[in-house]
Length: 368
Image (cartoon, rainbow, N blue to C red; front, side):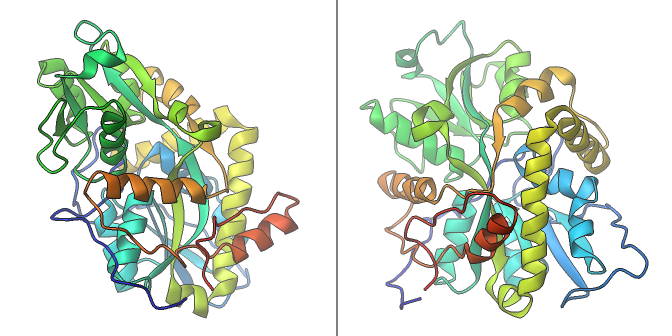
């Protein structure tokens, strides 16, 4: 990769993958936790080049590839005698810190923390090696206060956190309406209220917010409380697809253990294929994994509509990540980033070719 010009960070606040979809999850900035999942290595199974691989992800439906793949043993099957050491996170910065420190090797994470983590490290810490999920984000409002999109002006709309993926999306949408909002304070023609997803439903019930631009299943929880879906973010994107979850790897682990990375990617591809072929079984597996992590499964009225709104795929939808970065720049939260080299899709494309699947593109942002 060529030398990067001065790269970017968010002003004042780090961009995070604020998609904590469990309503009982810890708040942003929470430390990682061992997810307690015991992976079973078959007796006599051959180890790859590493004794173990440390995998990080969120207890979120948009991270269901990791949830389901580990729950169903699909990852361990591909890794053979190399043991999985899983950890869960509730905030993007803590997962990036874990990757930088070597506490995890591979992680499922949203686009904003991947962009911010890459630029803060001058492109020397991570690579995006696969996509995982698209969609699952909605603007849900109080139908008594907001009956049309123009009614959003003057109202209080929640997002998970300043500069997170949904916050940037809302700020960009507001700008496209011709309205003005100060990004950092959230004040303007729309009051943007940064509220942890775990308390957003209570804020909605109390009337302290009029709606929220949030991921699933928080959106479906609000609907269960009487809210109405005013806008599905998927409708704002070409082909109704935009990246919501990527797979990242530390560059050192990719260099030292390419066979392990390939095995994880093969498991991810096979898991996505199984999820799409068996949506009801996959939904149940994801909910069981969430129950083990949180002690409580999501009710049918929440998980059923939430699950339908997320698309699981291998394509990282690289062009949409580039667009999301531009939206953050437009909002004044990010200086122009140099994202060249953020992707290395060669291992994924090798797996896809072997599986008879279509190869994917890095939108010109691949490593040299």
